[in-house]
Image (tube, rainbow, N blue to C red; front, side, top):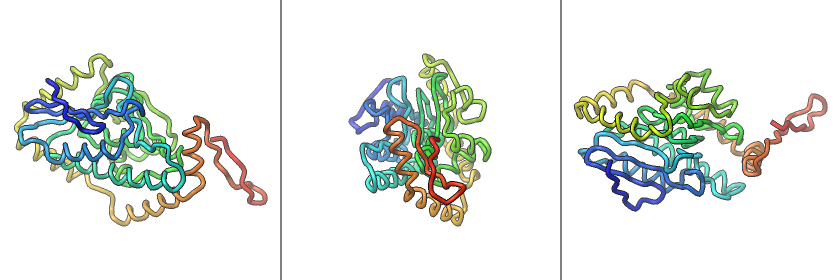
Length: 276
């Protein structure tokens, strides 16, 4: 597609008459997602031009789709507040993708972690470079993931594989992601652009009203977590944010070391430490 790149903080836009490519662009922080990027995604997918038939979400460069929410250098209460705000905006972005009048396709050009992976999972389907790595490190940081995000992974992976992805925090290769259904197609890194172009061409061939109606019906049938379940999960998440484990998990991540979790001893109840 011939590029037209408006000035949008952290989100490069390429447009032609029927398709839009949005590139997450924060190269100094591995394409981490800022508040501005999330707001820009919402603006683009909520109100695309009437002639736009498909939107592609990808990352700039060849190494990173997105490393997740950009936490900056915040610590303590400021860090927890940043996460909460980021989660709120991320929830708005994934909801906007779900209700977009046209399909949104993720082109995973490199590493996709945390909130970056959640954005990709919110898309209608995912095409990945064979060099991509995908992971959910939330529990390694002491975070209980938001129910809306968990529900998206459950719908795609089922309970067992969702548990494995989140509870181990271990990244998976593109090949493994294809096996478990986390991505729908993998191609050699040098062929990702052409594979995405082929998908765009296929979508454009469909009748616009029928495509939009079918997409909306599938989204409605997929369902959402019950309100009482969401409330319970939110209480659990707040407890995790208030814990010493959360502070230790983020400190370990920034210091590039294994977290040292405090565990109760079998004797007097004094904590012992696990290197994790």
